[in-house]
Image: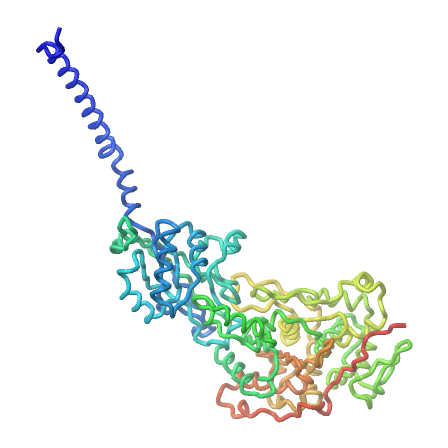
Length: 614
């Protein structure tokens, strides 16, 4: 039978119709499934292929002083990003970009590394592009598929170096910080606080970033931005109100820079109220936090890092120094609290310029001696011999115990990161563990603020704030706490506090700070000259005013400052500026003091105060 008979042809045609029908039925079912049952899913996939997400940084909250004056704010800036489907295309675009704008160098490897870490979001090339760069790139847009130029808030610090160590600066979060969860909720490429108040209160200032969708072609070329309905708007950070008095801060900055003696030396100044509210916070030399905005260059950072004056060191909270004679007020307070002395108590051995202890003579700064003094007179003239004997009366164990109880071996508790823990012996055994033996002369050294005693400026000023206030040592603060931090009661009576204040007033009226110019303001305080191994002496003065109702406490520390009486005038001028305002003519007239030799009545700590070795 032939295969081409009509019957056979009809049978084959029927089979072909069935196969074709089944094929069309299968295709129809597939189309129905894709276009009807799963249409939403495939629509999302199509949108994802067409739309790329670009992060919208949240404006950081402003930082203001106690009166609302700006310390840190935001201004308009531009971020320049590239959309790329893979690393090869990104590197190709970066190579093209580098040839088009050679005057704006960047590190392609760094851009790619951040792109990987950001889980392939648009690659950030410049976080702080200026108008000139943006204009140039807009002209070159046809040669740069995937280019996105986005207006973003840029951090700025209107007061520049005057507040560098206090306000700090911001920068991109690092992968290490993300791994350690230092900034909860942060994502790669996000701007976070890196130093000062910016990092301490980052969770308040940072806000919540948003997302913008950009429509691109299959090759990654930007077509247009999606509408507002496809944006998640960022939530700005909150404003941070500090306790800083900006006019006073500017005065301190100008005082340090305009005074040749200070401008040539490193140091710090801290002003606060007796309750702990910080009014001025200054470390010198300082730096301009604006250079960190958008990323500091390697050359700029190297210049700051390698500067022998170490401007990046925050000397208010990080530097630790022998407290010298300002610590004598702590020793005096210990003796009063324990009932061993009163303000009129005289020591058995009068000062003849030195004190014989064992086989060693410990000298007083005044070679001629001070004679027989009561505690008030010993504070006013800073007599070392008096405090050698008072330290012995208190005893090593009690002196060390009280020092630790009052926080001289701890941090002050100020609301800033990087504060160093002050150094103070934990016990007599602490010496034995370190050097194998406790020399009895260590007690004498501790009694005048030398030996194994290194304090931060902030911790010493906090102690003097307690003497100026109600006898409670409170943590200094830059931002008001919702719940005040607990204070430490020194255990001094009102009579004790009044006696110590009067003695510190005598320091200014007739003692070692007699030439400071603080008599008319009723300033009370204490000078000090601290010894540092293999370095020139450093100068202290911590004072407050008015003595009968203290409103401000100011401490200054100057490395290579020669003597405490040399720097006391700068504390007085700061107090005068705060109490009397900018119109007082005495503010602009520094007291002329010699800086090459000791003033009459100044204290010179003998370089042989190393303790009894016998």
